[in-house]
Amino acid sequence: MYVVLIGPPGSGKGTQSRRISEKYGIRHLSTGELLRQEVASGTAAGVATQNLIENGRLAPDELMIEMVSRRLEEPEYERGCLFDGFPRTIDQAEMLRELLQERGAKVAAALEFQTPMDELLRRLGSRGRKDDRPEIRRRRLDDYVRTTAPVVEYYRGQSLLHPINALGDESEVFARIESVLGAVETAEN
Ligand code: AMP
Image (cartoon, rainbow, N blue to C red; front, side):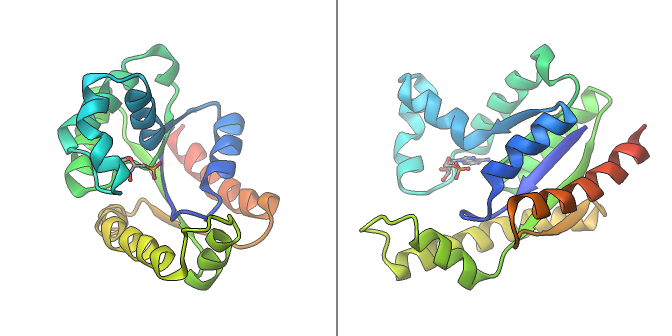
């Protein structure tokens, strides 16, 4: 089962990813994490994108799809994958569709974590970074909404979008995810 996870910083995506990955036996693939590893090991891709990443800009689509495609060739991704932070653009979404189609697969669901803006601002604030002033936090969240909105619409257009209320404790949120993915899994088999 291939699942796309869309959620703003502070929405609890990391925690839920681990639980989803465990329960459904699918690998968690965070493109942000992959890029940070490339930067840390000083690969050509890492050197080329370090600046973009540090300034919160998107890395080039070709690089992203290349990285994802390489991972999907590995046997541990055969059962599916939980994409985290990918796709970020319509081109990436289209390329992902083609990549999966070549494998006779497709995205089964896109989960959109929904958390009210004031709650996100509060959570990011409590992370306690001194330079994380409210107006900067606000800008990061506005950027998130602006860049992911087209991807959200893309999946809505394909009837694959499932909004998840991300307010509440960890287990409560996970129960909502389970009810969506349980139905999706049944429909797939
Ligand atoms: P994240 O950990 O998902 O917030 O990603 C950290 C940074 O990596 C982002 O701010 C981008 O610079 C880059 N990045 C991660 N995923 C993508 C993607 N799918 N497309 C382009 N850039 C990405």
